[in-house]
Image (tube, rainbow, N blue to C red; front, side, top):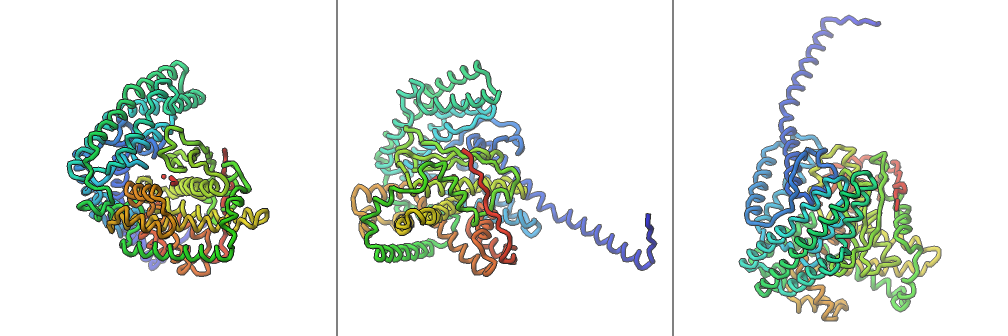
Amino acid sequence: MKTFTFSRKRKATICAIALFLAFSAFAVFFLSRDAVNFRRFCNDFFVSELSGNTLNMHYTVANPSRYGIDSYTPTLPSYSKERRNNSIKELASAIETLQGIDIAKLNDGNAYLYRLLLPYLENEKNGMLLYYYANPLSPSSGMQSQLPILLAEYTFRSKQDVDDYLSLLDQTDSYFEGIASYLKDQSAQGLFMPDYSVDKIIAQCDTIMDKTSLEAGTHFLNTTFEERLDHLIEKGGLSEKEKAAYLSENSRLLTTVMLPAYQKMGDELLLLKGSGKNENGLFYYPDGKKYYTYLIQSNTGSYRDIKEIKLLLLRDFEKSIESMQALLQSNPGLLSSSGTLSNSFAYETPTDMLKNLQQMMVSDFPALSDVAEDTTSVCTVKPISKNLQEYCSPAFYLTPPLDDIGENVIYINPKNNPHGVELYTTLAHEGYPGHLYQTVYSQLFFRKTETNPIRCLLSYGGYVEGWAMYVELKSYDYAKSLMKQTAPETEALYELYKLDRQIQLSLYSLLDIAIHYEGATYKQAHKMLSSVGISEPSTTRSIYEYIVEEPTNYLKYYLGYLEIINLKKEAKKLWQDTYSEYRFHKFYLENGPADFTNLRLQLKQSPLASLPSNSAQTGIKSQYAVHTGF
């Protein structure tokens, strides 16, 4: 072994270094108190949020014990003044705790999470202060239609899950009683929904929980329950005797608890009908504009001034109109031949379409294998139940738990009967490179980087739906490329479809602002729609009512899309020669979900700006195996 001897001078130097390192270690320990407090806050917040809502917990994590939730009582969320007051107190306390933490003493990952959390919680507190402006029974997205879907897809991984499910089913009566009490208080404050919305919801309550099919045991909540039990039996987690007992209990609860709960909810709505003071947008409520501002920030993740948002939409609308006019001028026979051309497409089945979409996205999107070795992901495409087709969107993707992303489900609504390029772009929106790909990639990346799971609780509709809209529009270009050899004449048609989609969504987003922030009435909305050729009264009335019932929903999709386009422009300016589609998509996927203000800040700090232009781009490998579009 080689030995060393040190001079007095070298020994002194080493001692000085040792003292410096000891002091530094002490300083890091002292300064890391904020980091420890922040981590504790995030973990406690995560556990607290999930423990109080079993339905949400089940769809967020497959194994609660992995996240410190060892015991819980199955619980549906409640609607009450007490809950509202407690929520305000808890949010105020959480904000105060965060404000007491020095962000400068957090590492980069936690500092970013801190910057996301603080405005998110502050905005949620603003929304809770306007508690009675929300509508839990919206005709298009209310819990009367969402709850049965969530129950039908409630995964059974163990007998505990079955027991939890039945416990939740047993609480549906008290759950809807809480909503009824909320609606009565809402009515007393002059904030109750218009009669046309009431009529729709009553009809849904009668149709969704159909008495005849429930008593016959053929309702989808009967059949899906048995299918899930059979799957559990196959895994050895249940006996046939236990299955029989569970089937009997499920049938009993559906007919004696859930059905009466829906019937009673319909009766309560009928009694409240006529108490609504406003048939128009939020503008006409006392704090309607304030609530609308909250919704834009909460649902889109955009903190732009509403005037700026409107200008952004107007410019895009005008640009798309000009592009469509130019397209039609250069293809004068396009409209007359569109019916014939639209019938042909390279693929017919969802399976083949999803496979092709994965192939088409290879060069522009990072592979799942970039962030994990095991990237097995099964996608099942299912039709929406007949009981729900009338009230569901054309398609939606059901997000899997963050610790069990192997199985994914996309629902297609047969009522809309999508086919050809329409089905192709819908599957791009919901599957690859849309919701499914984005969700799986993000969750794999979170695992790899050991990101705090609280990130999964932060909801940024604009980030998620904006991405789905962005890739849906991109898929029209994939379709053009796909048909170029066999049917080149479809290129102009698919461009027409793409522009029509953009014009429609930007127009409806502008209408959303006009109705809820500027006070546009139906008469004014009809005039706006007629100016672009949508003049049938039943159609304009339907559009108007939907926007009144679902404020900011179109903005969630289209403003989210425009924010991504603007973020991309900033990336091109910043990265210059090092910019690529792959690199931008990788940045977007690995820094979200987030609001767009924080994404812009992250972009400026991104190390990708210094990468050479010829950096490797591996693309996505074929993964296919056989949060909602609209």
